[in-house]
Length: 288
Image (cartoon, rainbow, N blue to C red):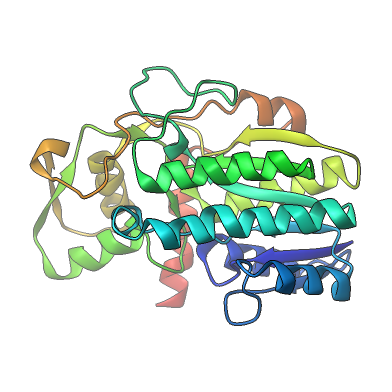
């Protein structure tokens, strides 16, 4: 099949590139803003027509959570308009859209892992635009798989793991929030799972939403401690509350996602977050 990956310069996009480099089954097309502006409906349609796209994996997103509070127009352009454009072209060409969404579509006030059919209620501009993107996609009726994830990191790009390791180079101790619960997700595991979804559904008609993160539950401060332990970095983590670390956008206090559905449909076991973190840090060590 002809597979298009948008947002290919991001963490997940680069993991898809790694998979493509070893895949002889499909024809891959990778784009980012410099080669395809997905907020331009005509440009998207031309690209689909020229390359006969059968699957589009949309890794593009406006993810600057705090900046989105003051730049709602741009966040909506990327997280809603662009998604709708991709969905409309998928609908026209009978292609399937795999769209990456987020735990931020929930209000974070829960205490049990969020299921796919639980009520949404985003509390930030980022979360609201990501939910609007999901809704715009569904409204087109195109074949689609929405995958919500959380706390994404990899050996490339900007993310919590790399930030912590950089801070440890110049600080003996750091303050990290302790009262937000979630699950770190290695982009490498997410990318592999997307390929399993493509293999499972093929060209059949599908309208599904899934949750995917690694297994387990932690907090940001415990995540930081695990990073330093695995990387053998001497940096003390002081636990602070969200109140002590105010941000422009409200963060979900609880964003654990229930993965029962995707595990059942694909028949997979998902790695524990600490095991995948170790793999990522091993990758980082090889590149530095």
